[in-house]
Image 1 (cartoon, one colour):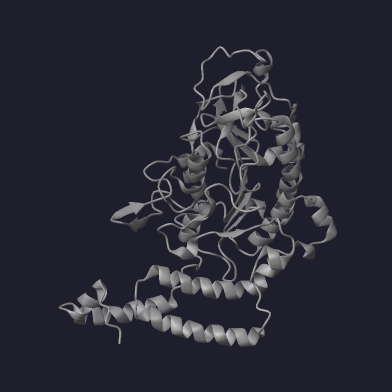
Image 2 (cartoon, rainbow, N blue to C red):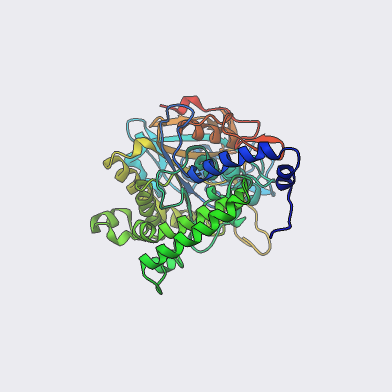
Amino acid sequence: MNDFVNRRNFLSKAGMGMGMLGLSQLISSSEKKHNPLKARSPHMKPKAKRVIHVFCNGGASHIDTFDPKPLLEKYAGKKLPTHYKTERETGGAYPSPFKFKKYGKSGMPISEIFSELGEHADDMCLIRSMTTNVPNHEPSLMMLNCGDAILPRPSMGSWINYGLGSENDNLPGFIAMCPGGVPIKGGANWRAAFLPGIFQGTHIDTKHENIDKLIENIRNKRITRSAQRAQMDLLQEFNQIHLDNRKGEKELKSRIHNYELAYKMQMEATDAFDVSKEPEYIREMYGKSVQSRQFLIARRLLERGVRFIQLYHGAGQPWDNHDEIEKGHRKLAGESSQGLAALISDLKQRGLLDETLIVWGGEFGRTPTVELPKPGANAGKKNGRDHNNHGFTMMMCGGGVKGGKIYGSTDEFGFAAVENKVHIHDLHASILHLLGLDHEELTFRYSGRDFRLTDVHGEIIRDIIA
C-alpha cells in the first residue's frame, strides 16, 4: 500500500472526492487516447510545413558572405569616421578578402566562398538588418534558439513541435545534428524546459558515419524483434498502471512516450540516417564533407516527417574567426556551400522546397574593423573580426518567403542595422507565421503565467512573405 499522499490524493479523499471520481474517468480515457506528438492543425493556413536551420555556430561574418561593403577599401587599416561601440577594442577598417559577384535576375551579391549558391539567388531572401541583444556566444545562442538570453526557456524546435505535432510516429519531431560533440551551452540549445519533455530535441553526433556509432544503442543485439516487442508491450502495461495512479504527471507521461519512440526508432532511424542508400550521383551532388552529409540526412529526415532539423557547423564556435578570417571562412564555406546548394536543388526537384523553410545564419555577425591582437588568442595577428550584435545577415529560402529579396540594410561600413531593423524576436514571429502559427497565441501556462517563444515581443516581417 502506498502511504504517500500528494495534494491531488488529499483532495480526492476529502470533500471533493465524488467530483474527482468522475473526473478521473475522463482524465484516464483522455490520456490513453492522447498522443502528444500527434499532428495538429495550425492557427492559419501555413506556407511551410517544416524547418531546416543551418546554424553557423560562432557567428559568420555578413561582410564576407552576403553583405558587401566596398567602402571599407577606402579606409583599409584606418580608423572609421563613425564611432562604434564594440565588445572589445578593435582597430582600423578591414575590407573583405573575398570578391563578390551578382547572381540571378535579382542581381543578388554573393561572396565567392558561397558561389555554389549563386544558381539559387532568385530563391533566396537575405535579411541584412538582423540584431540581437549582446555580443557574447552563450546568451546569443540562447536568444536565437530559445528567445531568451538568460532564463531557461523552451527552444524554437520544441515550441514548433508543441504547436504542430509530428508527421512521423517513429522519429523525433526535432533533431539537432552537431558533429564532434555539442555546441556551447550544450543541450540547453534544444531543451523543452517547462514544455512536456517529449518535445525536446534529440542530439545526433554526425562525425560518425557508421550507423551503430551515429545512433548509439539503437538496436538490441541480444533478442529478436518480436521478443523485444513483447517485452515492450508488457513494460508499457506496467507504465500505464503507474501513470493511471499519477494522473497529470507530464514528466512521467513524456518518459513513457520516449521509451516507445526509442523502440520505434530502431528501424526508421537506421534507414533515415543511412546515406549509403542514396544513389551515387546524389551523394556526389551533395559532396563528401561532414556538413554535406548532414544536408543529405536532413533531406531524408524531412521526407519522413521530421518537423524541425538543426544543422550545427561543428561543436565549439568554428565560425568564430577572431583571426585568420580568410582562411577560416573559406574553409567553412567550402565545407557547406556545395551541400547547401545541393539541398536546395534536391528539394526543388522533389517538389519540397515550397513547403520547407531553410534558415541560414549564426548567433550574431562580425565587425567591419579588425580585431586587435591579445595574449592567448590572436596574438600578433590583425586578420580577423570581433563579435557584432548590432547588424548581421540571415538567409532564408523556400517555405513561403520571397525569392531574390533583400530586406533591410546595415550602414555603409556594415556595423549596425539602419533600415528595417529585425530583432531575433521578429525572426521567430515570422518563422512561426510561415508555419501557420500565431506567435501570440502559441502559449503554455507555467508558474501562473502564459509563456511564448517571443515573450512579449515580435513583429512579423511581412515584406519577406510571398
